[in-house]
Figure 1 (tube, rainbow, N blue to C red):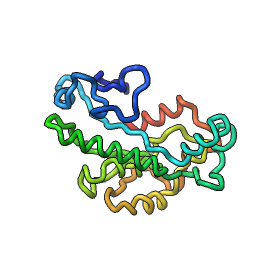
Figure 2: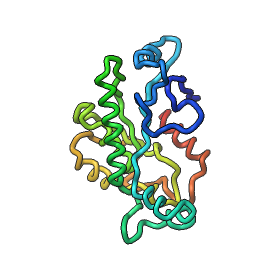
Figure 3: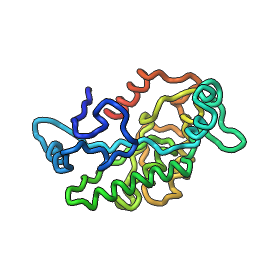
Figure 4: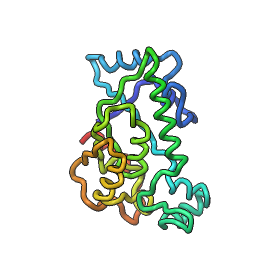
Length: 218
């Protein structure tokens, strides 16, 4: 199955774009009504995806602190230093929490416009804590409490070798996320108690693309 995107968002253009573009990245001259109209076409099947990267995690902070060369050479295989823990499955930093809150505020502002974006009706997430906490920080107060979050094992960035990319146990994930008391987690099957995908060998980009495509089409 092949996926393609419509040229409605600035992120479809080559070049560097801000992490949080004005109006959630709509191209100039494009309205949310245009998006909704495209979704209603009968000669094609389109879905609107609000795709977000997680906010800054402690592994990102560690790479900034020590430099990418030292990070890739040996530090990414460790779990932390005297100041912070960056693996396995690190949390968001305070800056990462602020970044999620900024996306929350941007979406809330868009919803106040006459031409407002449609709300998502399905929420999917990586099982990594940084992704789940970014989702919570983004959507709390915007969508109803008890909105389920579908957690897919395959929706993860490149796996292996780096401790930050090894997820916590299922029990730990449930315990961590339940502290928010808002969005219940629904784990896609199979989802083992321990991380069965991570290994000491770094995953290739081709293998990662195949894995994510399988998760999207499952």
